[in-house]
View 1 (cartoon, chains in turn purple, blue):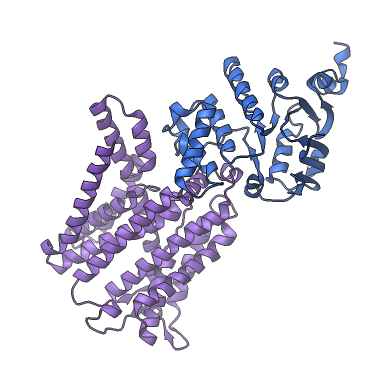
View 2: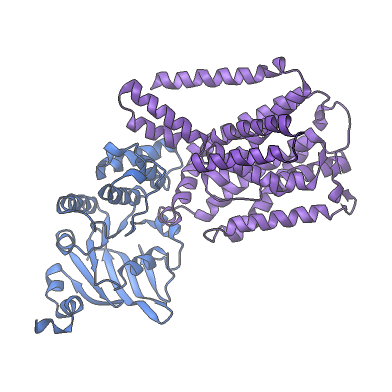
Length: 343
Length: 243
């Protein structure tokens, strides 16, 4: 068993070093940009996974948290020149507040109410942003979008001429969210979230304050999603309401997590990177040929995944591991069940 | 006299026109094992749900350890020291047996290691150590019933409410379960159990409360209760004397 852990550790250390050295190999800005976006999607899917995967609360409006982070941080930057490094905490705080406003009344109810509330509020907020030119002296930009003030190469403003600093920032964010996901999963909170996902009545009978734990999970998820929104803003430097807050943003986090494996630590990461890479590749090769063909193929891949591998890629990995474990040791029933639940 | 652990005062709940539990008065003393029996629909499980706060009573109060716990949420009642099992077992399917029990242990400790230690101890007590890493959804019915008891025990209750934990078990499994419940009781945990398997109830409980149409119709030792004419009437109907 210790040998196995060491082997895993070596693989992880190798992957980390490889990813840190990646910019030395990849020199074209376009490829770098694609890789950055893949990692950002993996990060956002991991954020969604804390409330949607662990706690099983289907949020279909996480776009409002990316929007909260992006818009608030950038409005503060444009108006007062407040560094996004500080502004992101204000944006994150507002996202947490929003998660409470949605969660407080709906987490007491069973079934689809939370999902419905997230959709409704997300739609309302997209319309609201689209129709708000400015609030007092604060320019929001309305449907035209918000342009981030350019200040040139400035670490304080998170604006760089090269893509490489962005790569390291988003890579750090990914490592951070993996670490947080793992910590949550193995802590009391993680046990409580999975328990209440599996059966709320049984969870309550065992002393779990169901509503409070759902709110905590939603708040953690909202805060880190907002940081993802801030990163998107400083990377793209232009906020288009439908792109940052709309249904595409919200749904993407859900798709990537489910395809990768909801409720696992690495599922959303794998799903996020693989699926957005596939999406980018087919867009690159087919995007110019027939309008919408790349989206059609992308949709088809997601559908096939959901039909044939509904538990996600991580489940497939576990099954293969289990099979190999059986061949290697002639047993492995007990340890593989552990893998399946602990992965 | 022993000290009172649980006291129900005029406990009543109505669903529309139906009074499911009607002015239920009773006391449970520290360390005893009490059976709650009655025909189907007598209000036994409803009484449990009133005690643990799933339902709020229309009237009456619940006292636990001298403290009024009426109207508290189920998770608060659990933290006061009342554990319960469900008639239809509710395992956390996608968690392993050990993880299921650890969820209960976390009530008393935030530390994962400590929760694991408590859970392992309880897992061995109920005899599930061989299933430690199995997912709960893969357990058989008798194993699930044991897990249900283990999950409740992990919260370290002073009072354990067992809702038909013997239903669906075969005679050997019932024997084993009786031994388990007795040993739990001997460790000082007060037990209140709903059970249709009368021999088992008699083997475990020193006192039995009988409900019918939401009302307590008898209370006493197993011998007293089984010879009570009201009880026989409730189970066999009015014409039993002619039969």
